[in-house]
Amino acid sequence: MIRHKILVVEDDVNVNNFISSILRANNYEPLTAYSGQQAYGLVTSKCPDVILLDMGLPDMDGMDIIHFVRQWSSVPIIVVSARMKERDKVDALDAGADDYITKPFGPSELLARIRTVLRRSTFASLESPAVNTHYFSCGDFFLDYNKHQARIGNIDIHLTQSEYRIVSLLCRNAGRVLTYDYISRQIWGPLVTEDNQKLRVNMANIRRKIEKNPAVPEYISTEVGVGYIMKESD
Ligand code: CA
Image 1 (tube, protein in one colour):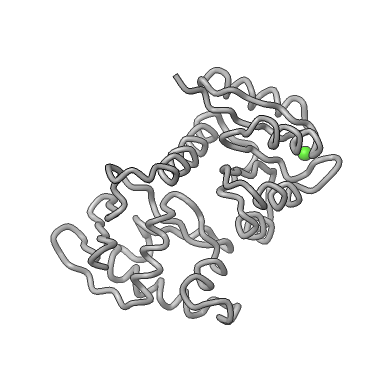
Image 2: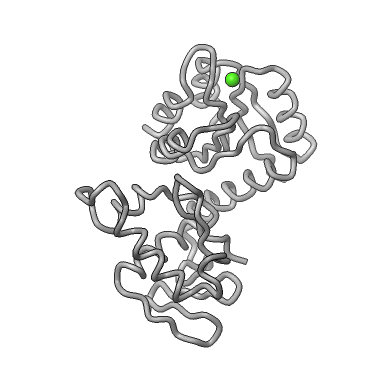
């Protein structure tokens, strides 16, 4: 049985112990770092499968670690922090963090986040043709990447080209928050205006087309001030 190695970067000893014991009890192998320097050492020597990262460390900012790791590795990074500002969440995600979890949190929430990033990274590393990358489905929603076609149940949904590209980007990253800026740049290029007005208009139209109640979306939800997230495939 594979035991995934999870690096816990957290200077608060009690919190670090708490997280590590949850991990151990659930068949993960925790590696503990109490400073940025220790984290650097373990990231390079032990190649963890997931990094849980506290942003406030005694010797450096968590952002430095994200930048450092992303120079050469796509290992999933989940930011673990107390009361993060929206801007900090956006910066961490844009720098390459995969997800964030806000303290205090319970074991089940933490474990769910870890499973999600592990599933995604395993999926990404499997180039096997047996792995289906031709479509996405979740509840009644179905998206065919080859035919560029969306359906709700048996009903074809007509999406404009921009709408399709936004939806397919979110589907390929289902379960992960994509920031407004990131989505806008992916769809319209780096020169897109910063207010994300275009994206909001498109999203309103997408929701009208795919959601039963666009005001209470079932598939694509909003992380206020941060971005959008597609519900994971079932
Ligand atoms: Ca801290």
